[in-house]
Amino acid sequence: GAGVSQSPSNKVTEKGKDVELRCDPISGHTALYWYRQRLGQGLEFLIYFQGNSAPDKSGLPSDRFSAERTGESVSTLTIQRTQQEDSAVYLCASSLVGGQGNQPQHFGDGTRLSIL
Amino acid sequence: RKEVEQDPGPFNVPEGATVAFNCTYSNSASQSFFWYRQDCRKEPKLLMSVYSSGNEDGRFTAQLNRASQYISLLIRDSKLSDSATYLCVVPGNYGGSQGNLIFGKGTKLSVKP
Image (tube, rainbow over all chains, first blue to last red; front, top):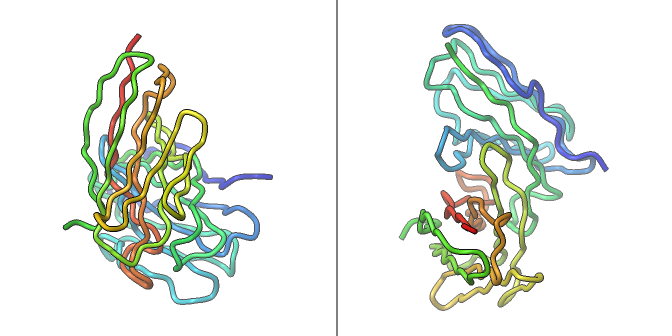
């Protein structure tokens, strides 16, 4: 079946612009995660959605970052007034059930964001 | 102790060598663990799941030591294609700040001919 799908695969934008990144999880996966990975660095957790529960937003680095998810489907990550430090690969992952540590996460190819 | 900690490497080994990576974790209640592989400029991909004392898949063996709170990954007869960064993944706290899994920063492996 189809894996996690992210779009766009690459995004180049000017500092100060808003960007919106999209993630389509694997069908049936109730948990969805967003991570950021800067060049040569590890994964940085941003936000976690589990079913209809309130999302865990504790990883969002500033109020310029927000994310939404409609039910158990598509999620969008929005970055407002982008800064050069936002340049990174943004990875989305989904899993069958979150919050119990028993299910591996499956990743999309990521969106490579470059802020000029 | 950090939630998950790995030796960043790099580990530079010749083809055919056996190499082992260790990963320590802090949450003694953790039940399931994973090793992911991440190639340069690619997304992480699941390599192995570890739910009990260990797991073996071909040339790859993962072992779990609950008493000492570490997991290891052993790669036998290493191939050039094994060159990648290996991420140790442990459960976070329920409802904790990092969702249900915490990713280590990875150990870089480079297999040379």
